Image (cartoon, rainbow, N blue to C red; front, side, top):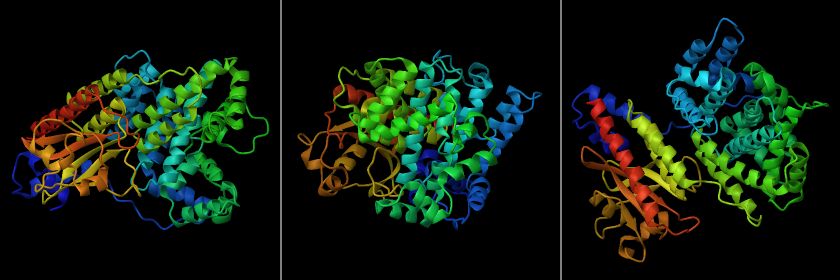
Length: 513
């Protein structure tokens, strides 16, 4: 029996005495387990890369994109047909509804619980483009993502938010279309870095030597650039509209909306050099010319956009990309009179409402745990948050979901040791039933050397997670990177979200009985 099966055995409240029991638990394992990366032989030409991405690596996205194109090209088809395509993919449906109900897309806060209502409220064109993004990210967000892939995803989301903000300020006819076109503008780069192998390593090696540009390295290794791969994929998937128009390289007289897409990426590149850089000031002047806003307003908006982008990345499920975007906020240090841009109370309330919605229906256990962790990590403002499960021998806890954890590789799993003699942090937490606020100044003896090697010696929050009154794992959170102090308010919010996870697991068990 695998460790996760042993750790989750008590969720069903039954002994595994039949083949059906085993299959049931295996389904549970699949809900929480990360799928191992798929190994493929690498394509050699532009056509081969396009074919492999469309038919082998991302077939679901290909089918979704082409089906939506066919529906919206047919005047006889409407919201019902569009909804039926989306509903064929349960994960896509959940993600789309979650995104559709965020303030970014739904400022009126009118709750949308069906795809059909979302189409009516937001409009078929916006839903079409939002579906493309959700389906695309659903296809690529996996254990194969490496840092370069997440950098590309982070830049695309970040650039898209900036482009939409400028589009709004210039009274563009469809700022949402600008957002989607910007987000998918680097579709070739993102797709490649998510699924490449040795070819990607060779490109990185050439770039790291310092005498080769990205495009030159791509051309040398692949025989084509990743921008050209983007054009090829856009045609294969029939993305059309502003997406395809903006993705075409070398256009001499570019339209203003295409220039908005490019400006979004210019801003993200400028922020890498810092808010005081010449490149950043050039971007500010361009925005001044387009929007007639003051420099102070522009600086405030750029900072706010960065925070919004980090939030949107989390909503899309791109948590690693969200952390990379969030780091860009540090580039604004030194700008005067900038106020906080995240209302944690409001964010906690929104995520709490999402959890309530999940619990009130047939529970998706993976979505529940992801949302609870999101509430702790973003809603409270923690540096590292993790849900770990007991392994078979009950001597350790192994990571199942984590946010903000700095690891050598994406595939690496954080493991917590459980020590009874002497008792350590995790033994102490699992021995109780309530949330535990560990403080080195008070609980020094609980921080064993093995614990310190994994988590350091920081204040932290820990709460056991139960099924059928038996502990099966725990949620851990700290500010071990920025070393900011924890507060009683933080602890109460942590305890609330962890309790919601426990309540959800209890209901999940009842639903399955």
